[in-house]
Length: 95
Length: 138
Image 1 (tube, chains in turn blue, brown):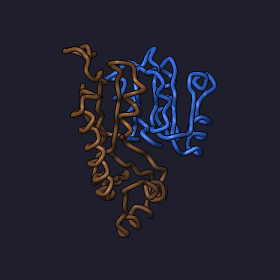
Image 2 (cartoon, chains in turn purple, brown):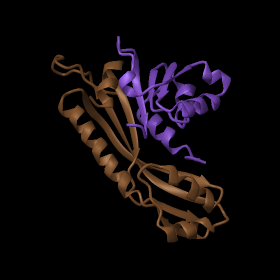
Image 3 (spheres, rainbow over the protein chains, first blue to last red):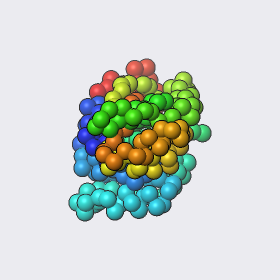
Image 4 (cartoon, one colour):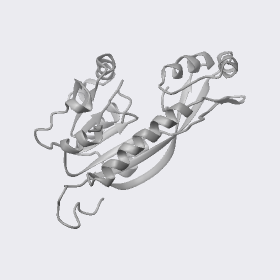
């Protein structure tokens, strides 16, 4: 089990409060941090260039958390940047 | 243009980036009976050095300010040694010494991998903004 003790979410929570934030999750992969973000943030936009991994991330979320997350398959260069709309970007092992 | 430039454009003024990366070149592996050795992630460490260069570029050009920097340890638990050999083999920049792989692969009890993770908090700056921008954080 990856990070069974939840050290990474705890470290992130120690430096920032995700409550009410609009979160951009860069390179969400299979959702290692997506659940943590969905449980605390107002909304999450999670993307990754690997569609299979994005589907796995979506499937791993509970229905209630799933409602706050929008998933997409693309890389950072394809971000819609018509206007700034995120309070925080979460880049977990993904830059 | 690196990924952080795209992220900067998507962030509100003074928005934050939370960036984590595993930085251990030789993360240790252990079982209940004691240390089993280390993964060889030196190639990955070189990749991290390249990423660091991109981040430093965005700091130099004024897109972001470094607000916090800290480290912690993430422990991954595997049911047995063979699972540990199977999963990290797929990781970029990670190699197994054959002797180590055989030794770990024969381990029937749960094994743990400890990786040091670096966490950085960057805060977006508005280029050409007034002195003192962005406001003090947190």
